[in-house]
Structures are given as structure tokens and as C-alpha cells.
Image 1 (cartoon, one colour):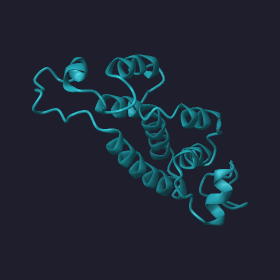
Image 2: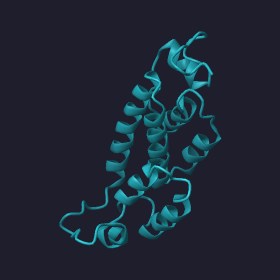
Image 3: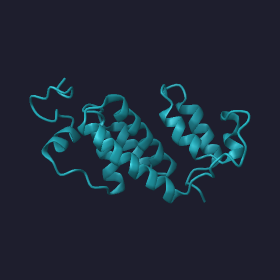
Length: 156
């Protein structure tokens, strides 16, 4: 089994999120979970099965998600908007692929302020990942600016 989602479910999900996935971050994760036959309509015509990486296992998706999580923490700390959005969207799709609808729901219910920190914290909580033990990240995780007088962008 590659994921807890079937190839058909992934195709349906691609259709469902396509209108709101303006930068294609979600599609990137979902497309990567398809086998060659199911991904073929989305690929360049000259792409062959040998060019395509096999659909990842659940363990590989989880490992990839953990990498995105570390990336997200750096982008939150650095006040990086588009990069933070990228990681939030990718983490959400990884959680979905792994059948963790509870995490997807928790992320959807969390606010986005502070570069998606509350959403990323919901992901971390759902997967039992450690949240950084620092005052600034604790504040951001609950939607507050990193410091009361932040001039980097999270104060507004």
C-alpha cells in the first residue's frame, strides 16, 4: 500500500483543490503520490514510466512531511510569507494522503496569522512532533506576534 488513499481518491482530491491551489503547492504533493498511469494526464507528453518516480509509501510521505515541517518552522521564524504558505499547504496534503483527516480538520480550523504558525502547530500536535521551545514560537503558535513590538511583519 502506498498511502491510505487510493489513486482514484487522489485524482478526486486534485479536482477538488485545483481552483484554490493558485501556486500549485498542493498539486505538487498530490501528483507525487500518483503512480505513472494515473499521473500521465498531468505530465509532459514525452514523460515515460522510467522517468516517473513510483508512488511513495506512507513512511516516505511521513518523512517528506517531517522535512516540510522543519522547513515551515524556519519560514515562520524568518517571517517568510509565500514559503510559509507553501509549507502549510504541503503539510495539509501530506496529512490528507496519510488518512489523517483529524489533522487536516485541525489545520483548517486554526487561524493563519503569524505565517501559518497555528496551522503548523496543529500539524505538529497531530503527528506528535515537538514544537520549538522558545517564547517567540510559543506566541506565534497562538496567533500572537513573535514579540509585542515585532517590526518584521507579524505584528499586523
